[in-house]
Length: 463
Image (cartoon, rainbow, N blue to C red):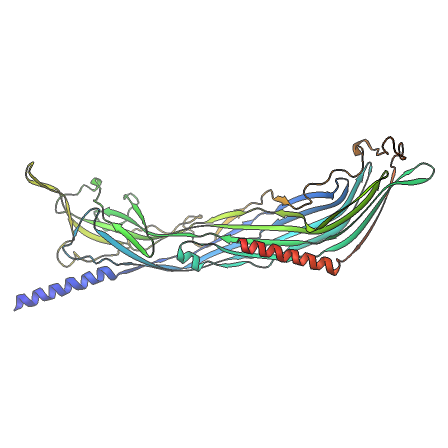
């Protein structure tokens, strides 16, 4: 009777240990913070429409500061029951480690994108030049925020946010008269340009997370982790990591009857490039008419971006690796290969969980496991990266100009009427300019607003 009771209690103990082996949970914290600070991109463009008569733009823009933060944890649980006396077969025995991610995370710009825009009307006609300021304004966006949790949990995705803010604008009409004066002055050339000029600043932020949930696997003669151990990384998919048992390396020097340990450490690897670009735009419409030494014409440029300065897709990497503070460690007893009858019957090595109280348990010791790491090493909060301002890219119909409106080579200082015309021999030696400015009309403002909405929709749909 006592023997039966003893066997029953032993069986119950083994069952409890087997349940514990399959139910133990290890949590991997996923808290990390990184802040990127961006440099300023500056550039000048123009004049437009002509190289000697038109509008210039001088712009600067910076994406500001962007903070990316993650939190939460991923829970790992051994779904495979490890039994006392169980034999592990290399290439066949699989230990399934389930995982359940629960990330939190955001990116936030603050201060957000800022910039400045200066625009002038200029003329350079022979030795005569002049300029009048049209706009000189600061620009800024609001804060961009993106929520990362869902994409991080899924292991893949794109999270984006964008801002488009219109700034001040102006309407202006400019007239230029070029005269040839000897005793009296005669107007030999004239041009008038009217335009509506606005200002805008845009910012677009996108994070592209790829998350790998896996574990590091190694064999050792003690229940410890050492950087000198030989590791294999096993990536999971669909909430499960399939750890296929492999024979321990010969470098362990195992002898028959010796206990060794099959270990696996839960790991979460995040690879997330974060792209931030900002842009200053000069939406404008221009109408011009001219008569130069008897040759006249007119041109019209409908509302569009006369000039746009973009910082480009400035990218930094948010790439932390999170390691569990504990690891699973399964004890196995090694029996080397044997040939009881030489050349006739040989048996491969065997790997068996020890019989008895400790054989079926899965321990999670916390000895010497590697810490979390990222672009700033082991610094998990307050990691700062600097992204220098780039050269910038310029787009818009004002990028190239139409060349000079007035004939001749201004570097000589003389612009004269062409031979064979009524102005032959007449050279410009006086230039008069008049500029009238006002706030943009309601139609111009409406056009600028529609342009901004179109740009915002296009950038949001493309994110």
